Amino acid sequence: MELSSIAKPYVNAILASASNDNSTQNWLILLKVCADVMSNEAIFELTRSPKLGNNGKKKAMISLINSALGQNMNQNQERFIGLLVDNARLEALPAICQLFEKNSAKNSHSKTFTIQTAFALSQSEEQSLKEKLKGNAQGEIILESEVDASLMSGVIITEEDKVIDNTLKAKLNKLGFALQANT
Image: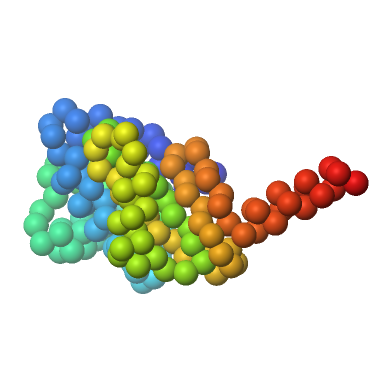
């Protein structure tokens, strides 16, 4: 099963809880720390070790996360980590973090766009792009930039299920189809 599919019910539960007690920002901070902790190879291997039982894994993860946070998690957050341990889903933490960030931004009336370019954008290019994307939208525009050298030129802009492909490759493909249709 794909990690994004695993992440969805956890994210929905966290969002429901966070909206009740206005703790969205706290959860976002926690999930980012958890994703960072799980990106450590040694910790990842520790969580998969059959030598350490679930209680040992829970204690270790809670201790590591509290240390990384610089404070103790609340009971709901500790139960969440315990649930992930019990269900052997700790490896889904980065996907949970990413989906939570995306969905919480959606709930806050901001829009998140993924921008793929062949080269890194400068700050002025990002600002210009933000202004163009804002249009009539209300709220904040969040850009997530990715560099993909295989694009050669142009940009792919993605927002949820909408994609604008303005790359050289897409233009050449379109031209190729048009030439084929005329022959």
